[in-house]
Image 1 (cartoon, one colour):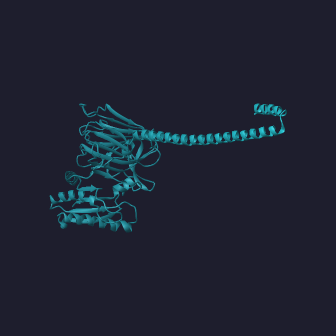
Image 2: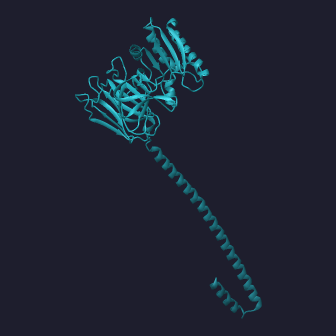
Image 3: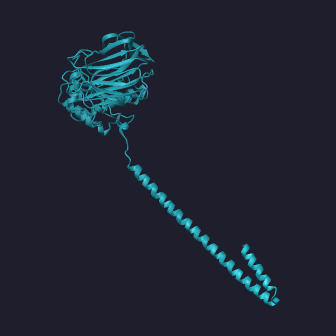
Length: 420
């Protein structure tokens, strides 16, 4: 700008020596040129502004496109990442269908030794805990075992499950499984857990010559504190060679190859305060080795249950909610029961319907009766003699598990076929 002013001043001085008319003409021409120059500058400025704006728009679109491509690439990479699902299948416990021993600890004399148990060492008695009966395992040293009259040291077989609830504040437990020919403390496998809540399983390997050298072991720290003065549910499943251990419906131990041959078991506790035990259930049968959906009983399992215990218990006969209408999938189990009954035409059976404790007795008692009658009607349609069947509704009065949990309520919703 300063250079332009100097040039203009020089021109004016030159014009001073010229005529006025000539000066005026020159200035007019100069002004016109200046206007044209300014116009060109403005037009160029506008053009540059438009170009820059267009560039920004185009670059923005390109940037968004690049960002979109990057996002798509990232999403593709994330989609290709592996999805871990093992934690979602650790509740695969399937209870055995042939009940060998069961004790929900009800109707006992408080202060007496539990009527369904035998004593190995120490002391145990019936106590009332939070308003319900349980077996109190004496502090320091207590060793008990189920009282089973038939084959007292050989009642498991190659497939079985054991369930129980325990509550304690401190101490250590031990669940021992012995071969029929072995004595207490000579375990084919044993489960222990102590003050820190860690589970340890010692077991005999399949190729071992004897039934008590526990060279195999599995250890798992608990994620839940167990010595918290609360009830916790344990379940143990043995299937031919696989041992699985569950706590509160979560699997913590999964041994793929252990020696079969367990015949009997004991419960052992040692601690500074007593512990409490209830809802013990021992049954033959287990879930498939690597499957969890095939839980229906076979006709052979029904026959075995009837022969050994005089009854068959199933949770696979289901009804519409709050109704006595059988669900279609229940007919698979009912057909197998019918097949067994048709081969034993001279035997009479009581068909019992059981509910959980959701709802009042005024509702549950007649509903359980109606459901038992629905099962009887289905068996009659399949050819079973109605004369040999009697329907009985038990309501929620004879639970086999804790109604405080959904798992327990599911077990209590059952049908029992009892040989008369």
